[in-house]
Length: 144
Image (cartoon, rainbow, N blue to C red; front, side, top):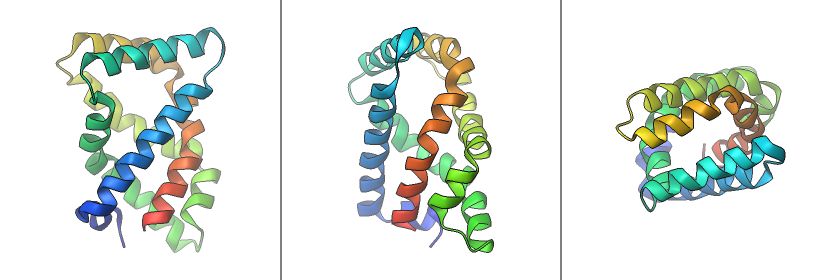
């Protein structure tokens, strides 16, 4: 079952959104030091823009993330590897695919505060996204 098929199932889609939001919350909570304080402050700011903002962003980005990740999921299957194992071994490639989606979305955001926060954190985003890739791989493997 490909990622688009999974997202067409409303029950699975809702569960995936919940799990991805928990993954994001967990990754933010893990941040340490001055950089971690900046990430946590920006996350709080983004959540303050509108209640449920992060959940809505996850919901709206899922189709674009699925389009970016489906070829990678297919490549794992072609090589006879689990999605989670493949994601663990290719964190940079997967982070780049995800960041290409968020970069485009941030550029088109109408919220100046969101654009500003994203712009300030973008230089460290790759490391943070790479940290979340294994968890994302497990989520995708669970539903495909």
